[in-house]
Image (cartoon, rainbow, N blue to C red; front, side, top):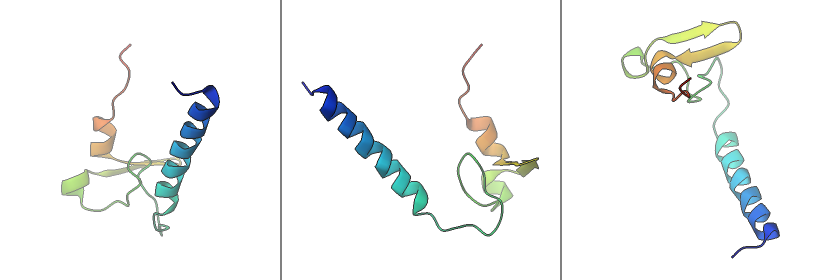
Length: 70
């Protein structure tokens, strides 16, 4: 079994790997989808690009997220 210290180190390494993946993306010149982090792109593939206030999402990303049932 792993000790608590080993578990925390493993979690820290996983988090840093996720951060590296996100930060390696090229900087965008405009708005990006907050769910998939892509630019508007092809509406046939990603759906309509919706924007309201400071939130931008593709329609298909929005309908495909898993929300908890109430």
